Length: 165
Image 1 (cartoon, rainbow, N blue to C red):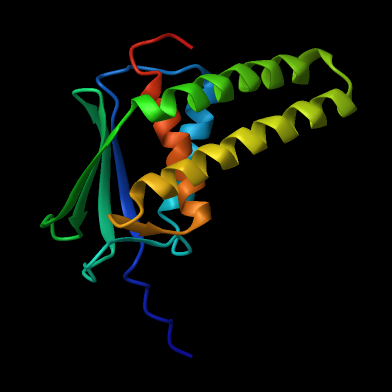
Image 2: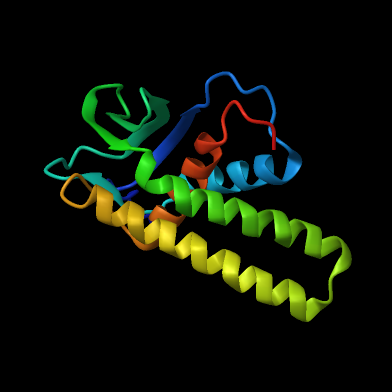
């Protein structure tokens, strides 16, 4: 049986322009690596509105306090550039990192029930940030919830560039 062709409405490559951050702490580096790995799998849904030329190469960056989605075709052709203000994400990212810090600390010292409770809060904030991202990209980029979740993880990583975590 022949392999099914890869879907076109997906991300095939992700690059993060993180301003030259050399290394994040191991927890953040692991989250970043997993998010990128999961994004480039065939099961994500991502497409600039009005474009059907994927799969896409995505570069995420922060430029002039705006989140940049630089979307290109596999051949390097421009497909879309979407800029979103970072400020609407600041509170949710800050809250998310606060809960993440509590979670990583709890893993070392807390009971299983405490860890699970903190993890539920962490996932809830992550979902909220993902929904906010989907809303802000509405009419610009079509994406499914799981893709939004992975992209929100990368937005969090970009949000802390230049800080030590």
